[in-house]
Amino acid sequence: MSDEVKPQPINPSLGMRITLAGIRQRFSAVPQISTDELYSLFYSEETRDNNKKLLLLDVRTQEERDISQFKDAVFVDYDKPKSENVENIRRKINEILSSFSSPECCLYVVAYCAVGYRSCDIINQLLPHYDSQQIKLYNLEGSIFKWANEGRPVVTNDNQPIKFVHPFNSVWGKLLNVDLRKWS
Image (cartoon, rainbow, N blue to C red; front, side, top):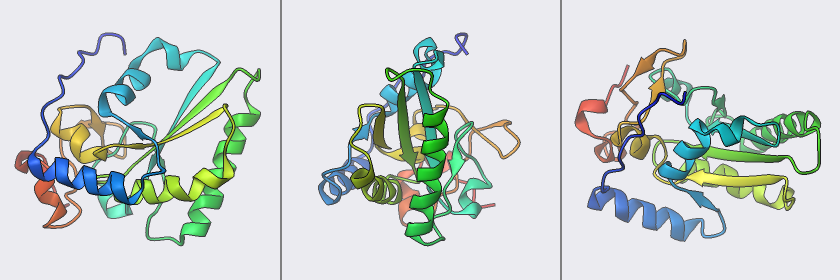
C-alpha cells in the first residue's frame, strides 16, 4: 500500500462542520480521530508491526454497507440492540488482545457510520469497559461521508474499489457530494 497517493483533505462544507460540532457536543467524552490521522494509521508501516493493530467498526445498516465500506471493516449492524453489538465488539476486542505478543501492543478501535452519530454512540457504550493503554477507542470524525468526499478509498463487499457511498437518507445525504451518492 505504500504506492498509494495520499488524498488531499478538502475543507468540509458549512453543513458538515455544523453537524460535526453538534456530534462533538452531544458525545463530548468520545475521542475523535480525523480522516488524516486514520489514513496515516491505515496505510502506514507502523500499523503493520506486531505492536499495533487497527480494528475498524462499520456501524451502519446492511443496506448502507452493501454499497461500500472500508476495507477490512467489521460490520456492526446498527439495527440490532446496542447491548448485543457492544458484547460482540467486546468479544472481537478480546480475541485480538489475546493474540498480542507483549504488553506494549496497542489496539486502535475506530468506528465509523455515515457522519459519526451512530459510531459515537457505539464508542460511548464501549468507553466504560476500557481504560487500558492497550486499547484506544475513537470515532472517525465525519465518518464515511467526509472520507469519501476527500476522495479516499472505499470498497464493495467483494473488496473492489468504488467511489459511491449510501447517503443514509435524503437529509443527511446532502452532506455527501452528489456524485458519490448511490442508493442501491
